[in-house]
Length: 324
Image (cartoon, rainbow, N blue to C red; front, side):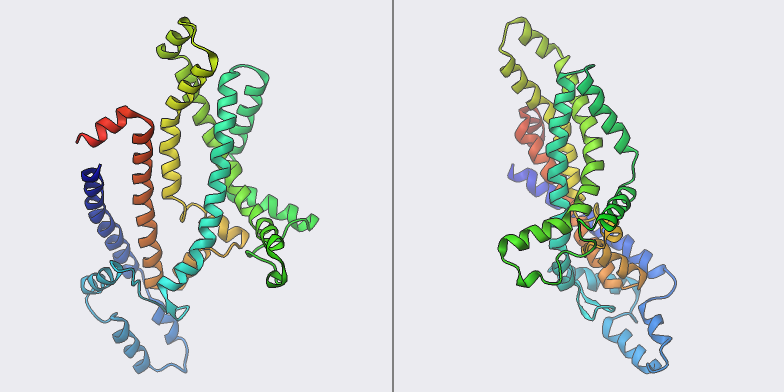
């Protein structure tokens, strides 16, 4: 177990270096930079811009710039944002709770409902309820999340039942604890449900197919032939059907930050998505790199969590994984 974790951590180092270096080069090769916007301001002299270049190390060779950034990034010192005039780490720490709130809540909703709907559909294969669940899955799999978000925003605008944009109302600080929770949930409803409805549809099909495969396996046929109680059979079926679902859940963990970016932008949810969009549009080098760095780490952690969950659920995976 320990050797496996050490191996995976060592394996993560070239991944992080490779992703961040390629991203750094691409950003630097793009025409213009944030300082070009300052040059359009007649009140800012060329001498001031040159001093800013020197201050941020932008006058040095590309490789030296990257190595200096990487050295600081190891200790999560991600530089200084040109646009926001604040440390990148502070900006990310300010926005990341909102993104995690949205991503985790939508993921939990989709995982719970996908597992329930997929299991119900599989155990009732060919029946009306199975066809209804499949109709939902096929319908919403083809609906883009941003389009569904637009529809929910239109509903909120027409009815006034739900707030649009932001995390909290203007009078949030005057509310008691229960009212604050309700207010946040109201703001969270549109972006979270936009993600959850579409995600549930795709995962429901995966769970259904996985459960059906186990139900038709020789193991279950043998258990039925021996007269094993139905509740025991169900337990074995669900445990064995968890493998692909767990893998997908691990990928969902890996995409917690990046997965909600488009929905955040569409619904006005102040998370990492809107922050990164502003950073890219303004060519804020260190803010873009900071977001990519954190996203890469989340990807690695998510894959590791998925592997550990699979090993915990399936002894065969555990034996094969830890015997390397």
